[in-house]
Length: 107
Image (cartoon, rainbow, N blue to C red; front, side, top):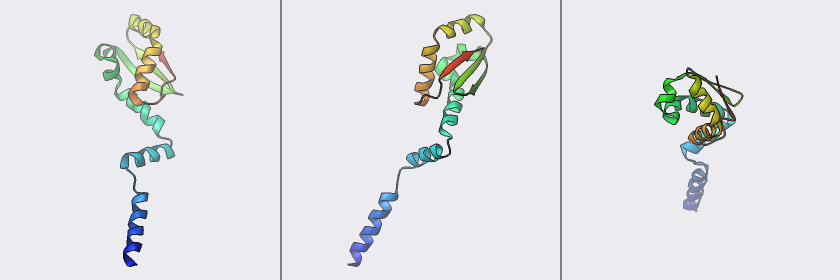
C-alpha cells in the first residue's frame, strides 16, 4: 500500500512541473510585460532586421501606443520606407512573433 501512495505523490508533482520557457511566458503575460519585451527586442534588432545602411541613417527609435517612431537622417530613405511601410511592419512583427507594431512613423 505504501508504494502506491508514493507513486501518486510523484505523479502529482510531475503534473505541476512545466518547462521554464512556458513559466517565463506565463509570468510575462501575468505582469503584462510581453508587449514591452517585444518592443525592446525590435529596437535591439533594428540593424539586423533592416540592414546596416538603413541603421546607419537611423537617429532614433521609440515606441508609443504600438507605433514605432523612426527618426532618419535621409529624406530619400524616409520616402522609400514610407512607400514600403507594410513590408517593414511585417518584417518587424515576424521578428518578435506577435503583432507588436501596428504602425510605423518615419520622421
